[in-house]
Image (cartoon, rainbow, N blue to C red; front, side):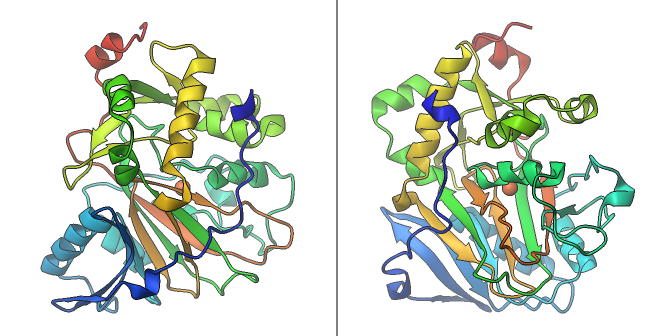
Length: 340
Ligand SMILES: [Fe+2]
């Protein structure tokens, strides 16, 4: 199947023309530099004026959340945050953070901090992740378009990625796609077709797509740690607009067979990730931090390469506490064609 020949994306997206022409906005103590604006939709913004050297006052957190609801991806430069500061700010954004399951043992994790995920390429002994190790292959799935954690029935709302190291030689980028504007541009017939669909998300599906030779048959403890979860495809974003909740983890459309499910899922992912909905942000120095909303965007990393130098990036993930946090109910699943 074509869609199983997984996309080899370009390392970066083309520079966004006109981005420099968007005027910075001054709001209170913030300077906001939107990344792009089109069709009445803003997506991505660099934010300046936050004092990260001390705890963030609740009124500033509230203002940042309002910006997050508008832009979906907020970029902060040279924050100087430590692990503790990263976790403390994350805990101001939601009641609970996702706990790292440490698939390969907490003792083998470089950070060993259950509230952070080590998504860089550095091993415990300081060497770089070796080509063809299980970790290398696991990371390949992160280069597919996805949201974080839709394979949890209690999903995440935000992810916050913080860089601790020097920039990667040759540049390092994370790419983001605006699923709100992409939904708005769908033909009405497609909107009608997908309105009530429920998707089964499975982490091991995306691992298999990216690395069939290693993750064709995940290990029993891996399967047990991450069973699939079910969420509505069409959702309402925090700003009230409809959005597509979609990812390479999306395995099945309930009520359809695997082939038809994958065809629709990848048609929609391809639609959402056209250049007109996408920007790439560069990791320029340690302290750079990107905070995104998994409910109204998709993202992807660059795949590991052997030429890559050390990349030390750590992620916190804030669990959703909104109305759709726990995904599709049994009634919704049954109505969508699920057989218990
Ligand atoms: Fe991710």
